[in-house]
Image (cartoon, rainbow, N blue to C red; front, side):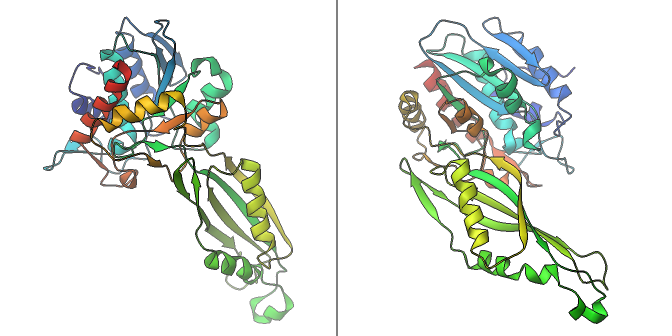
Length: 363
């Protein structure tokens, strides 16, 4: 078993985590190492559920916060084990998304033995794959008592800036019908790919929209992300499927966002189609109006970073939102480098995030 030294400098702990391959679905080794390390902390109650580990203090504090991060990564491309660049950056798969953040969690879980509020540390599996496999989602569904809190922080990469809430996301397939024919007699058929043209034109012409929610601006995006149709080079396609991805602001509920998408498709000029949802994930409001948020913002501001901003993507803060727990994103690493082959995270940013969280947890 790989042994993790939780007393090591936090950036070296991050390197040790990067060196453990943990592609989604194969987190056994890293989960074993995290569990073993946390069970050495006498002040924590440690619970393992599959490859998700929950470690909690039980000091009877008036408030409880949850601090969460996922253990898995996208597939490796020659970038494990990790390495240090000349600029003091930790490079390698997962350095940004999100083993640097997990290192911050583990370092503080061991060091902060008497926090000012009780803490639930959550380390979970299978975040980078289908939503129904997500380890935090599994805990929310099957063991909600393990993730109960007054406020939550998800250590996703944010460059050390607090990012409130998240956009929602949905995928839908627009299935368009036609009639097959030999391409030498194209007029005998109805080309389903050609029939998709009004929808594609409407998408191209649709302006980007932005909405301010609790003082933070969220940008929306509605895009065709895949198109499929045709069975051979000499056959007029009798079916075409356009896959849409709608990233929507947290001012809309999931049902309202679905209605907006359906209205857009209906008004595009397309006819004889079927719309089928393949993924639905709700948004999360910023969470900055929670009582605990003000003290967290103040603690992070003491490290000299920028003011809170909106999280433009979707993250697991939405799962806390399902439970009525306000949540924000806060962690080291540039989110634009997540999943990149040259993924890398500055060591000073890892230390900075550790300092921001420690200040808040011990104030």
